[in-house]
Amino acid sequence: MLKVHHLSESRSQRILWLLEELGLDYEVVRYERDPKTGFAPPELKAVHPLGKSPLVEDDGRVLAESGAIIESLIRKHGQGRLSPAPEDLDRYTHFLHYAEGSAMLPIVQLLYVKRLGDAAAPIKPRIDSELKNHLDYLEGVLQGREYLVGNALTGADIQLSFVLEAAKSFRLLAALPNLTAYLERLHARPAYQRALERGGPYKMGR
Image (tube, rainbow, N blue to C red):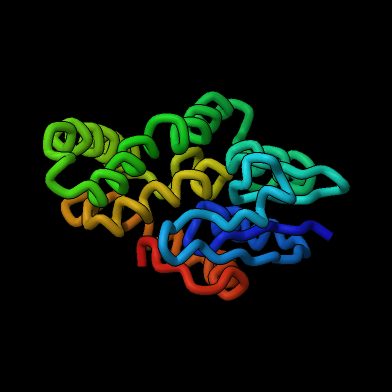
């Protein structure tokens, strides 16, 4: 059975959703964040040297990094589900890597500058500009589309979901109707709801 090392309020919620979409059996090992720092507990380092979540144990291997986990699980267990059509592979690969490569950076920066208060004033405008750039881009991408790639949910949608949930938690989606409707469609999926039940409390984007 697959084992997911799942940190509360984290990117690993996506992996639970992926597994629910694929209809696979899995075990959840839960970890709570340090109440003072918000960081992952040191116990995760016993599973992987980086001590980050998500981590997935699959047939004796420990998989790390959300994008790599998504690709591996779909390739090994998907039987064609959540994969793009051959003609859409480049678009799929772009969004699978874009989510954590470019789009997530200003989200993480915003999280840290909010903790700095007035000390962050010199860099805050640049972060706000980058956030607007990426969210406007995605708003245009989803014009007239239900999903990022083709006409059905793929691993790219699952990967991007956390970016938009984080953006919504910062109240950045109010003027972006395509992204708002898209996130609502993702959240309404039965597999997404089942993943919430398995993963425990998750406030991001709700």
